Length: 480
Figure 1 (cartoon, rainbow, N blue to C red):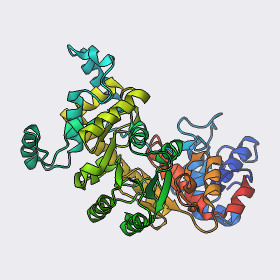
Figure 2 (cartoon, rainbow, N blue to C red):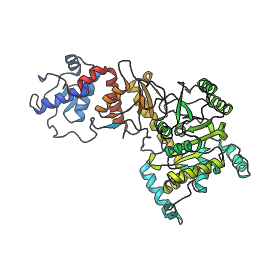
Figure 3 (cartoon, helix red, strand yellow):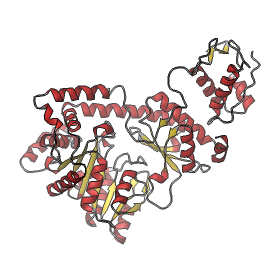
Figure 4 (cartoon, rainbow, N blue to C red):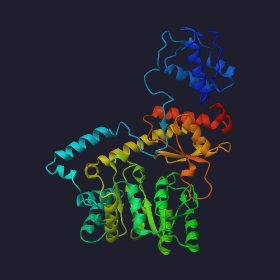
């Protein structure tokens, strides 16, 4: 047994890393030598007055760095050959982005290969090079037909043929008319253009008391006033919207109906009908931002299905496939509004990227888009399980098929301090102030699970956040 005296490097961001750094330093300074046996983990925990899990994590990290080897039944020993640098692989101190709400890229989706092969196939077609030229600002007819099919994917197959025949004969059935569809370069440009089309500076737009920062930015740029509505675990409370309309009806209502950003709430079908009915009675335009519904295996009707004549529906592919496509499908309340939106987009973003639009249409037709969304949904479910394991299910709100969560902090933590401390540890998260519409910001943070390159990196980052949660804000700042 070695005479190593366990200690923690005080400058370390987290305790377990402090143990590893102390061990590394003592090995390289010759205080302990190759082949020496370390004390049992429980003895180290007692000597340092820390949890056994902290020591276990430190020993695991030391093994990953190539400092020690564990031999069941014999103990843990300093390796005979210590690497000059850490073992190849991810360094736990490497930054991990849990701030951008992008979908993961699971191996099952094989997105890189799929994009390369589909692009090559498109360009090899007889008219493939036409996709390299300027396109209609609303999108080409074939692409708008494909978009309408994607938007109607929740329609049961047995009724699709009848509804499509009705649509061709001038009726609507249960389907989206391609003439009401506009294709934009992502949801953000669509949201900005819709605000420009429907609202004027000084108009009030109601939204949840926490809402998407991109919409906040678009509203601020155009001089709109955001009216916060009460929210609960089911999303926007219809009674709060009704009360606001009775006092002074807002011009618009902005809603994320499924997997709300940031709260993760999904509006029930009953609430969707209730909000649509209130909006109709009070003459309120609905702006339905719906990026996450393709990740739900169970399909709910869009608000545009309930009140299409007063609803703008925006469905981006950024959250269910990849932001790199820069393709969003907008359903306007009518054909005239669709044309007006296309005119605005022509003056701002001109058009959606033609090659990416063609790729999306191809994937809608052959089922690839649905398969990718399914693979992302399944990967999200696995990553959400890691979050439950690290953080405890009772501490945060999440949708098991989504790729973000809304973490409420214990009283000893302020959201800004927690996010700042996580940043010092190389983990980017977003404090609640970025989402708040009301005066007071919540002591909560949004954690996005998709950008982490793999589950191991995500698990490491979530475990570090869990360690921060157990510390007090003051104690953590002293350690840094």
